[in-house]
Amino acid sequence: MTVNTSQTAHKQPKSRAFTSYAWIFLLYMLAVILFGAWVRITGSGAGCGAHWPTCHGEVIPRDPNTQTIIEYTHRLTAGFLGILVLILMGWAYKVFGKGRVVLASIVTFIFILFESAIGAGIVLAELVADDDSVARAVVIAIHLVNTLFLTGSAALVAWWSHGVPLPRWKIGGRLKWLLLIGLLGIIATSMSGAVTALGDTLFPVQPTIGEGLFQRVREDLSPVNHFLVRLRIFHPIIAIVVALYLLAVTWAIRLMDLPPRVDFWAGIMGLLVIVQTLAGVINILMAAPGYLQLIHLLLAQFLWISLFFLFLSVMLPEEAPDG
Image 1 (cartoon, one colour):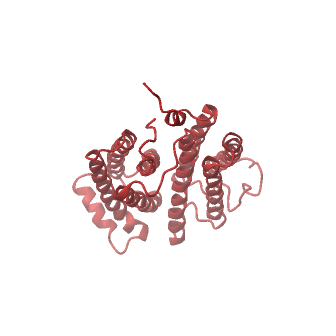
Image 2 (cartoon, one colour):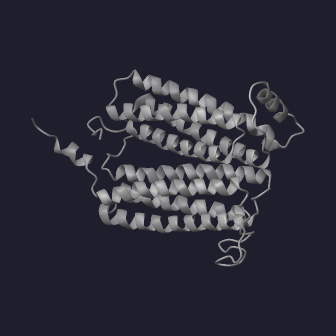
Image 3 (tube, helix red, strand yellow):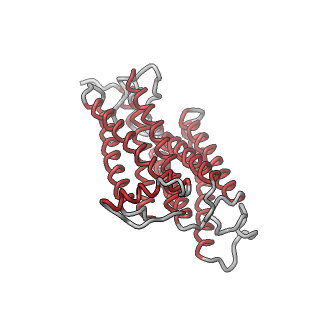
């Protein structure tokens, strides 16, 4: 039996240590993102006042309260992420030279800079704590879109470090366009979800089911309510439409004769769509408690990454290894 060495060469990472670091970096980044959401949920965004990068004008705050500790700790974890991405770029260059892995790591660094700039702008403009302005809603939606691009680029560093071939746009036919629409749908869902999460934080409600839930929806739509309350209804509607679309695409992929790698990521993506939808329903019924918001956000990130990998997988050459 002959072995295609050109394929097996792609099955082993060029540096197992770097690949492990890249995946750990991604996981740590997700933890920092969740911590940032916790800052919002606990109303700790103003924990350091309108000061950045200092905290109340001090490098290390003296006699901090709980909100200051939360905000300051988030800044420290985000700052450490900046150090880790510098290591990621340097290590990628040492292992891969001038290549796509290095490029993806540089893009990750750029999005981290954007993330920091947006976070700093939010603090300096005092779009924190009880601020319920349109500006805060717009910025928080943009913030989450940048976060999606950030996690996507970081995931790409880890994925490409395995030796996965470069995707080719001419491959994939209509399926890649269907998946691209799905990616745009996830972005739209995430933007509306960010605004809804802000509304749930600033205008909390009690858990309701049955007629009580429908009554709450009707009351939310009243023109006398704040715009963040009236916008609550849009996120579940958008989420359901996008979920049904992605499930339909998953079902269509299962009917096609595609490489195992495509079936694998389609299966992961489909499962995450179902789990995320159930989590969203529970979140609504339980009036969006903080811990459920974090779970919902984490599942959204996993869904985004799996759909991104599926999108790239359909554009790989037929001879590309499935490992």
